[in-house]
Length: 350
Image (cartoon, rainbow, N blue to C red; front, side):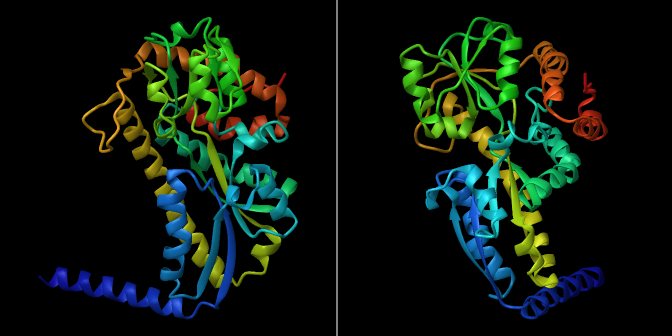
């Protein structure tokens, strides 16, 4: 009983301390361009975090104006340009928009290297300091964290039992390294806008398409495809950032407050992505775990150990060298010291 009383007193003391700390924060208003407003992660995690959690945790001292960047009529790359100009303070944007100009952006999400969320996040965390330097230099922003859209899976309107069946197939890919992986498997990488995928399936322009399972479910890909191959080929990650100039003008107490709370946001987004991936799979295939009304009837194909081994081998031998050729020698060295050690691979700069 004595231990319970002590614990209770400690909890109350911590809550009172946090409340007092919140009351002592300088009053500030910030603007945030968060991720796509149509995504479940924005609606259920990002929007409540910025509009409710931050004001509540700060006792009303930190108020936020938040919108998805698309609600402002912007495209992803516009967000960082506006942050660089000081027009926008905080923002979130997928790394895939920048892989051509900044190849280091794809270091944490090279197709085939991370087939589970724990590994994907470990890679992101390990490379974050290096990626921060790249974005600080090119866009004058400070990276606050990295979160995933979700595991990128294969939806096929054709019978598929494993990686070997992708030979000769036309596959809609999301990132450059995904395209290179598909080509290494003997398939053809095709660029198709997300919203056009069902039509592309119907017109036989593609045989398979890569996407997060929940995004595909919401777009009713289960009505246009028959097989879901549950082998993550990437995580389509996004950065959360703040303009360096804007950050330098924020009181240090508020900086600490925001840093601590955004760390919790990143935790929530990773957990949400994993849960949504499972739900998207269950609902696309009509499994009992689906809690939503509409249920698909897709055939669920689970990866074999042989396919996992093949994927890692192709990623290391075919995809990684092409990425290394695009990135700088320092970038490759940083990769080997961080992501490479976690994945058990070594990139070589020719």
